Image (cartoon, rainbow, N blue to C red; front, side, top):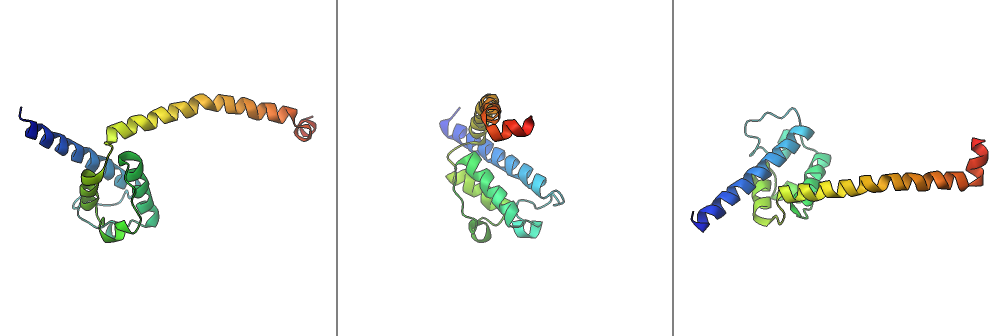
Length: 135
């Protein structure tokens, strides 16, 4: 297969992953938005407020390593189509790598949690004020 065809297929797959991820987020935070023309309808017309836009901003930052400023959603990135194109053109991390990294971080946190609990218990038992209140 031609290398340019491979690159085109990879670009299409990356764009599909971006679209799927963002549409899923929109479905979650704006459940009553009709699916027709969801790609071109402005976020504000869908009912998105600043909290929804901040959630989009956070997701883009975590999954694709892009730092977006909130005003960008009012100027250039006003709909899913423009956001997908921006991520496709500027994103440095694909969604599968980012997801894997996030799951690793979660497992590290889970492994450390029992140790934190034992320190809290020991502190409570060693603190005279807490020990006398529990007696």
